[in-house]
Each structure stands twice: as structure tokens, then as C-alpha cells.
Image 1: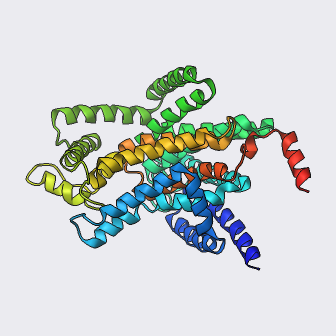
Image 2 (image 1 turned 90 degrees about the horizontal axis):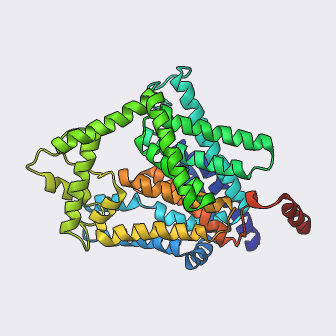
Image 3 (image 1 turned 90 degrees about the vertical axis):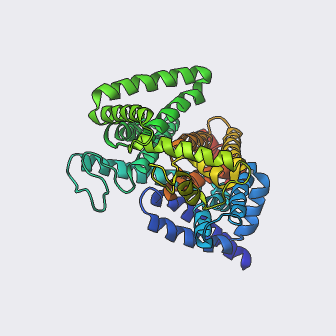
Length: 422
């Protein structure tokens, strides 16, 4: 009886994990509801034991939990109210969720359906963005943006981050599709996402992430020659967008002008100027507290103290995850995050060539590594959650002993396995 309950709960938890792919790009409330239900089912399915086994087998999962543990220790010595310390720690809960999710993604059907759900939700958001751009749906309500900057369910940075990542997944899936019409539809959706990121929505982080993923897409197939080819293509597309798109042109020119203004006046109240000031001041905090940092949740107070009696404004977010971790828990925390990204890259690289999860997992590492230069993505709900979710999906392919993803297996082999199962 107990075994039957665990089996059913495990199956249900897997499908809830897959369904999260559809909620992540759309709604924080639905994320929370699905996570609550998933944790109940996870407990009924013997989740703690299965997650412990996955943790023992995965260096990347160990590092994720280790980073959370280090942040938990940082709660003990931060010189801010206890509530602020635990509030900051709670924002890093996705590092623990990664470990919880790994065994749920050991089933290739769950992985496949999860990626379909994620890409479908992002594609729907992108299509609504086009409708918003052409004035066919109203902005400023459920759809957050406006025709001049048509982001939809999330703010522009998140919209473009998800759009760039979904474009990569769709393109990778198109290359594996067996039917011509399927391949054409996936490729078209990937192109629609790319154009939305580059030409419509003004999220500059998305430009950088997309450039990195395009380069990686070529490198994954052609090695170092692919890096050169991918970089060349990115450069050509960038020039075409610069001269062919007013939105892209204006954002690039604005970035350059703001950087020039910040060089002449470090206190310039522009997006680039503020970020550069955040970076400099955060680096000074790390310089003065290299071993332990100022404690989890202590960044805002330490920054405010640093800029007191200056013309600089205080902030609660340095818009750089590496610096935020370094200020809170020292250089060890910053290094641990970098090592975690490296471990995820290597773990995905051990999957067979041709496995979709291999490329999807490594693409997320690239997207996160680049995005965290300009944002504190572990601190942000959607970006932190999609990072944990995709990383667990890729690690689940290894935890389940999957030789390859379903998408990379020849049709005849699938048929042989299906007949053998019957």
C-alpha cells in the first residue's frame, strides 16, 4: 500500500515539476501554488530519500546546497535585524529547490513535457508582445509593457532573458526534429523569439545573453571554429539590427552615451552610471571584508554606510550577483557560485553528444553567467527559479541513468524499447 502511494505521488510530483515550465514565465502566484503542491507530493513520494541519493551522486547539487549553507551561516553575523537576514536567505531558496527537483526529472517524459511547457509559455508571451507592439491588445494592465516597449508578463529584463533562452531551446529542438513540418514550426518560433528580443523589447541583458547563446550553438557543433563563426554571425546580426531597428539602435546608443557620461561624472544618474557606481562601491565593501563579507542581508546597510556623506544614492541591489554574494559572504561565496556554474557545465557535458538536455543545461549556465554580470539573478524570483528548474532538469537526465534524451534517439530504437516494455 505504501509503495503504491509513493509511486502515485512520485508520478504526480513529476508532472507538477513539468507544469512549472508553463508557470515560470507567466505568474509568481502560480509558481508558489505549484511549488506548495509539489513539496507535499515530494514528501509523500519518499522525496527526502531520493533527493539525498541525487545529492550524493551530483557534485553540482552539493555545491548548490553548500552555497545555501554558506549564506545560512552568513545570517549569524549580519549587523541588521534578524527579519532582514532571514528574508534575504529566503530569496536563495531555489538553491535548495534544485536538489529537490533533480530526482523528479529522472523521467525523460517529464523533462520533455517540461521543456515543451516552458517554450510554449515563452512563445505565447512573445506572440502577445507582438500584438501589444501593433496596438492590438492594451498595455499597462495584465500585460505590463506598452507598444514602444512590449514586455508582457514580466519586466523587460526577465522577458528578454526568457525569450533568448527559449529561442535557443526551440532552435536546438528544431535541429533534432524528424518531421520537416515540425522542424519548420520550431525554427520559425525560435526566429520569432530572436526578433522579439532584438527588435522590440528593450532589455539589454537579453541582447548579451542571446549573443552568448548563438555563439555557443555554433561552438557545440563546430568546436572552436564554431566560436569564430558564431561570433561573426552575432556581429553581423548586431550591425543589421543597429541600422535596421530604431529600438535596438537607440538602446545601444543610449548605453554608449551613459557610459561616456559616467566616465566624466561618476555620480551621473543614468542606468549605466548607477550600475558602475554599484560595482565600484560593492568591490570596496568586498575589499574591506574579503573573508566573511558583511553577512547575509547586510548588503544594503553596508552600502548605505559606504555612500553616506557622498552624492551617491544607496541601493539594496548592486545588479551583479557575483558582487552581491561577495559582499555578503566574502570571496568564498563568490568563488563557490563560479565553481557551481562550472560543475553544472561539466555535469551537462558528461551527457552524450546529441542529448538535448546537454545543450539546454549548458545554455542555462551561459545565460546565467552572463546575466549575473548585470543583475542579481539568484535574488530575482523568475530568473533564480528557471535557473534551478533547468539545472535540475539537466542533472535529472544523469540521475535517471538516461543515456540520451528522447529527442536524440533514433525512431527505430524507441520503437524497439517500446515493444520490449510491452
